Length: 396
Image (cartoon, rainbow, N blue to C red; front, side, top):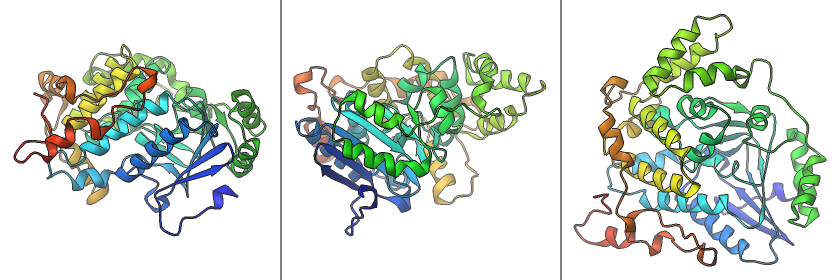
């Protein structure tokens, strides 16, 4: 069966063509299928090829091992911190790819088993069908390490009911499969032991017909509800607290609610917020709030700017300190700069949102006939990086 395929040469992404079905397998199981530069390039290559191929009707995507994808390769970012814009290419390509995943012309199904976080979840949530199991774990924990909700999540989270998006973005709260269905971040819940059988069914279906695909998935799916203790059952308190204008006010509101009976869940939430990067929290909240009024294209362009300015340490080096504490030294004792929310100046936060020159923005064509244009290699960036003595890019 397809899920048993292995690649002796260690390809990071497998692309199998089976009649009218195309199967993508993220194949870095030991690294929890994190997204590297090579992964992004291969995904874009396969998806463009198959969208243009009349024989390709159904695209399946899954992860090898115990994770779907744990998100971006943090070590890649950390290793590039001393080299200006070392990760610009992979960042550009990923945001460009996110747009095409959201707007893809063929039927896509994500089979999401295990961890699905950050940029990895961006390969799941936008798809027509996203199948989760009792072992699926979703989170967008970027703010805690001085980053922001990226890869289109300022668009996706800001459109969740009430202020659930702010909760998920600021706290990195984890959702299980049942909760993902309830939140609208996944479409179907299938028990994990049934996932191989579903995959086989979809391959044998050999069609991208939306109704046929839906019917095939529904043969294996269950109607589920969040468990009684789920954070999704705290919606009134979530909306009350996370609707406030600033991170400081959100925390103050949570502290007030924490003393009320039945609100024991707030304690760990507060602890996590107070441990997170103050700069990351402020950038993330502003991005989610802006996202409510922005199109997908506007959100992706904004997130590209934010990512590059954060990696360039435009106002803070917190992202590298956060990665160090989490994955390099693993001491879980980051030293944030600045160290408190009141020291994060709004004027500085605004700097990371400032538009680049038009030609240095993320280039995504809006006309259907040229929708796969705008690639990194045709942007000004390669030339800028190659020019001796000239910075890779400047927002000014």
